[in-house]
Image (tube, rainbow, N blue to C red; front, top):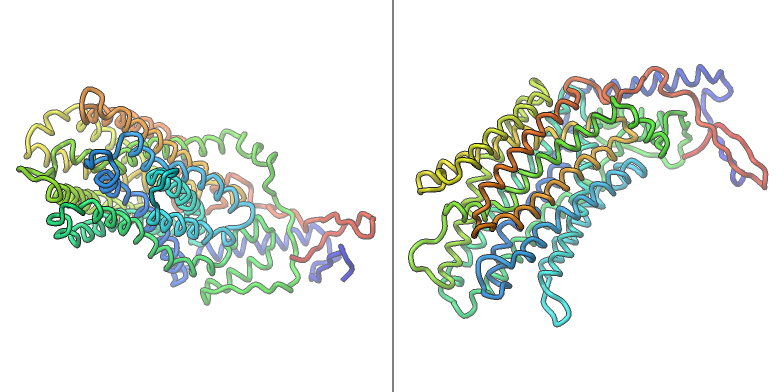
Length: 556
């Protein structure tokens, strides 16, 4: 083959361009129909499991710091109390959401540019490195150990952020229409198990060190230092287990067709993964690039300049922002809230290691109760109904119920925390809020952006929506840290709950901007005409021996 001149062999070469375009368009639509109408198979299970392990790891790493920060307080605070200084505690808890925001935007964009497969696994490597590096953080004259932890939690957050758009888009693009909501919910539900497991692992570690912490008072803080490192480091294990499978998952046929514009390879991939669950790419195979809408800066602005498309992005972004104000405001501070209402706080005249042990044990038990009673059941309520009731009704219902619950918890806070029996009522309402966050907007804000946009912008738009959520998490965390002690220790918590109620109300209105995606194909949801989507064979302009050569065929 001459340098700079690419030629392919194709049955349509030299035929009527209109017939070629029609043939390619029909082949694309037939391949999409196969995916959309496919029966549930082992391949769908594999996709769900591979994506779920990432979300399990994400949640474990994000929410383990909720317990680990108390351990860090015992070890590194100036008075060896149960909490770090306010600014340090804020830095440790906010570093991951800031990194996650950056990762969601970056990986969301890259997945639409270079491919879902090429990026999948890279984000997991970043998580593993960031997670493991935290366990090795140390103190030196020029370096503060908390600052080192903050840096590595930020880097870990970048990897976690990349997992959101990649896992959402991969699971949606491989799924058939009738099970897409349940498949994506199954992936996202691993977040609840990650949160729950972090609390279980923390309790096991605390219990394992019980004797050393209680009885070895001179070295009690050295033992607690080992405890938080074990708790964080164990988060690497599931990520390492999933890495191989992420690196070997096939590219989605929608990316191959609509972004690489290689209809022939996509059709072959569909046949392979629907029958054998595998894929084969021949690097020497001749291909035909289709002429189809291409992602460019101008095309992006043209698409989202239409109100029918822009309102969906606004709806998904604000809904996620409003939800995460409360979800992370509570999730990253559940230990503070448990202490604020006196739930499980050490009683009697305990001091030193005994007091530290009882406090850590009670925080772990409290987080287990909150996860098991609210978070996990909520995900599976969504799983059961999301493909029959619909995404939009679940999200509307969730925001409405959460508004009422936060109003009650906020305005009746004093009465609900006045006695031990009243505390139980508060914990019940708190668990109910966790339940309706997950049987509601926490699940649907993940699912809908993975469905509602065209393939060439699906990952980018999901990344923007998810990043909006993490901006809400950052706002909530900063606000919580700065406001909670106004008027006294944890005195302002009740007003924070009232603020959460307001944001839940705004989520009701932003949900009205979102379409119902249940039972509709991804192409139908893109608001683009699929008839004649492919206009022909893509022309390429190349330079050969200093001359411009216009050639309509190419090799991958």
